[in-house]
Image (tube, rainbow, N blue to C red; front, side):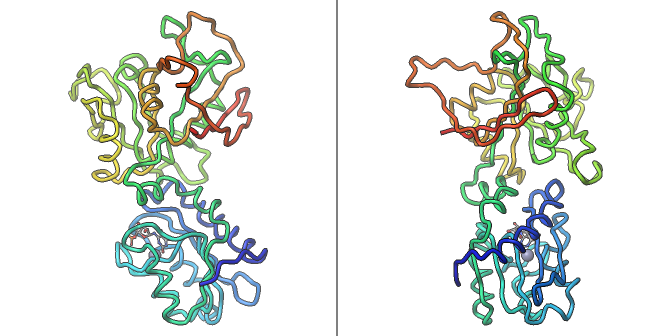
Length: 348
Ligand code: AOF
Ligand code: ZN
């Protein structure tokens, strides 16, 4: 196996990543994967994994290539699988098709695969190149990769604030601080998530639905599975009753978590529910718990250019005793959405 990074390989891997993106909201709990087959510098087949249970990316690309796969190079955004899951092993399909070389962005950390796909390909004499556009390909599957490597989900915490870091007036009034465009962007975060965690406080105050309503996902909204909702309810302020006043409580799949142990909750979401991408949309107290326990992988702040004043509610309940206990972040990206700023921050 060689590790190289030629510009031609990067170009075709970029096309494979574009393929993979088409499955971004629909493959859960499977990863989004794309594949491009190249014969004599021309794309002769492409495909992506659309949905768990349906064929993997390689199968669609090989189907399109047909006999033109003989002697071709396959570009895949994730190591081709070696196991029989819901579908047969892609490594064997690639071998059977007569592909000569396979370029892979990154290994599949799924313990059922984990290097065995590469081994199968190499044992049959296929040349394998690993490590082309790895970070770009991995960015599509933070949840899947984190869960396979650590048995914990990838946790995004989203907060909408004013310029002075306030999320509501003292009365609780908060509709709306950020623009419609920023709120529409949140729909994309939801669509990426297997589960949304909120607090009983938020349910009682806002009676949210926390469903996916975006028409901007590039796929029809019916194809996007609705994330399950977990309500943190350690004081048992909500009971699972069909007569409930709250929209979320009317959903039969809502889960209530009645302890303080957020680490166990996150592990359980991976092991029992196959939720690998988790979005926390809650109030200051829940946000403070996740942040201070270092359970957040990515903090997303939508900041509206307005000032709500010192009486308004703060974004995080968290009381460091000294500057040394502050929480710090790297700014991963910043962009303007509608009239607001969107900051994506990675905890240090
Ligand atoms: C690939 N190509 O396009 C994808 C892969 O149950 P299955 O058969 O769908 O297998 C799911 C596992 O296969 C998943 O957990 C991951 O390890 C791998 N995903 N592999 O070769 C693909 N989506
Ligand atoms: Zn596969």
